[in-house]
Image 1: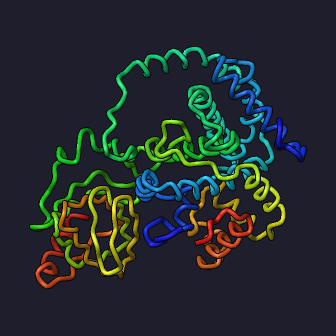
Image 2: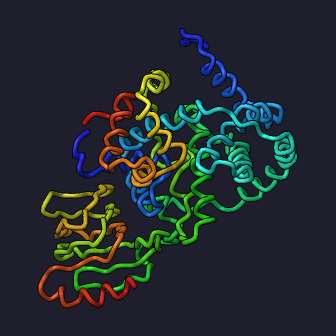
Length: 195
Length: 222
């Protein structure tokens, strides 16, 4: 691929997987789908287990849901809106939200599928992609350099799906401290747009 | 980015991206983003944080059984899909995509209830945290009387515009009012204003006459 100066394992993998999704979209290629499964299913399981440690059945159910959507939506996936890793993350997040809603003690009729669009072409107002690869690398490198207390809090928020309040309760930290740590971490990763 | 008051703040957008926001609030943010490209881009950046964190997780191997079960289902999935896609596609109305689950045809067809001479409202649903999701319709030049809330109130303007003590708001604008912020939205003269409103606790009207109404309003939340 032109433009890739640095050879990183993770970006090689991403490039490989991006070819697989095209094969799935255009040729309904099951072997390509199997390769996507091999790479992403273990990550989806870990994502689920981060929130509910030990809940293997829940993790498998999430894999089933997400990979089903990958198969069905491959043709609608638009790499200009999000790279494949990010698309899979949003699918996993959306499926988890739906799972939690269906299994909640208090029901709501709000259907999350209509709220969180899956970065498809027909989604509302196609957002332009902001310089993808650079942002990506900043985040990857930035995460390595975050102080432990900041990466810990991002894990709580993004992987365990905790609200700031829940994170504050669990870490026995004032809510304000949790908020400022999240903010500092995101600033260092350069994902907040300055106003 | 200008007018930062009329967009969700970083904290809300991060929670949205992480998937930890109550669905009623997420509904407001999605509605806003259908009008706001810059918040869409902010969200994309935040999503990448989740994506990278996920990539760095220690993989937890999936069983061969799970894989073969899924692979066996692919053909029937494709079949179901082509059946589903044969159905007529949804209309391209002006109603935000994420609200169409509650509004089938148009705003006019909804069972609006009169709240005051200036305001009508219709409840769309409740969130699992008890928050009330409703539409408010303010007549041209009408006022939503001074009110405060027991919890936060999230508002997105769907049609028309209104102004209050802090400025003028138009289609797509998003705002949060805290429990103690008093405000008096007034719709502009040219047309009626329709808003999506999510309230976490009962609204308190603070005018003299309306104060008498509060006990009745509160009861409807019981």
